[in-house]
Image (cartoon, rainbow, N blue to C red; front, side, top):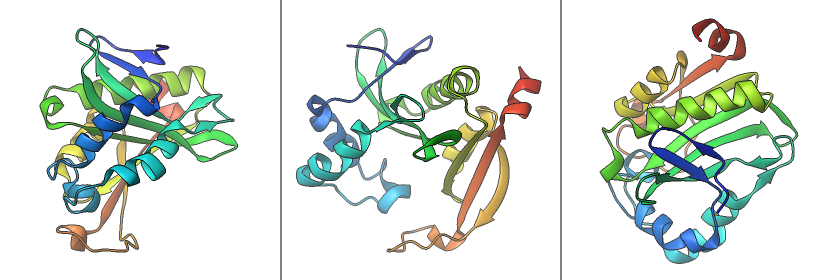
Amino acid sequence: MHVFLETGRLALRPFTTADADDLLALDNDPDVMRFINGGKATNRQTVLTRTLPRLLHTYPCLGTRGYWAAEEKSTSTFLGWFEFRPLDEHSPAVVELGYRLNKAAWGAGHATEGARALIDKGFSELGVERVTANTMAVNVRSRRVMEKAGLSFLRHFTGDWPERIAGSEHGDVEYVLDRADWGRRR
């Protein structure tokens, strides 16, 4: 299968419908989903009709997808996914960075490694001008990944979420990295 991006330990590849079981397992781990939906389980129908179509979408402005399955290079073990998708379907100028990894991959630096590689590819090859990332203010681990990947805190805000989950009362945070800042740090 075509690999979009490789790092020292990771292979990021396009999703296929064969990934449904891995996605279902990922989205049914309450710890993984804690800051997404409060830890609620996702059913197979939702993975097939909502999750997979979103992950399979190609963005014309990038000429590629915005989501990639992350595998451990040495074993091809599914670790989760990375998002690097344009906020405007027709412009690569501003992309959103995201990641969702299974617990076995936590604490090993995989999220930072994948995020840095996507950022470098975005600025050097895909015409990206700004990378943005959001999380709940209380999601300290995700915030740390953003910082280690080179993003800086921009703002604290309160999102309009359909359901409140534990910690949402503290709001959300946005981090950013612009091309010029990325260039100075290299």
